[in-house]
View 1 (cartoon, one colour):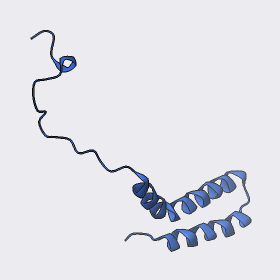
View 2 (cartoon, one colour; view 1 turned 90 degrees about the vertical axis):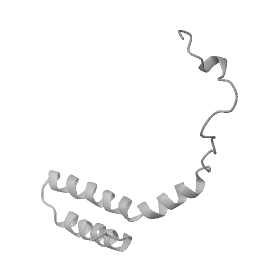
View 3 (cartoon, one colour; view 1 turned 180 degrees about the vertical axis):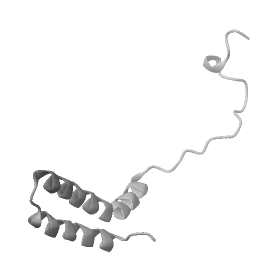
View 4 (tube, one colour; view 1 turned 45 degrees about the vertical axis):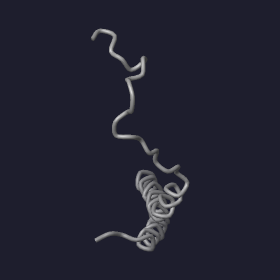
Length: 78
């Protein structure tokens, strides 16, 4: 089962409710971190799509170089 953005937003809202009822500092810290993680996960798909759209297309490279091997690529100790 995969979680959707709506599921993560619901979990983030639930952690805010739990945060208001938290009694210890450790519990508050854990819930603040969880809230941030859920918000980040809720936007993950959209951010990934944006990054993929901004990435340059992959370079087309020949499988084999044509012609003699460049001097810098030659092995000196052959």
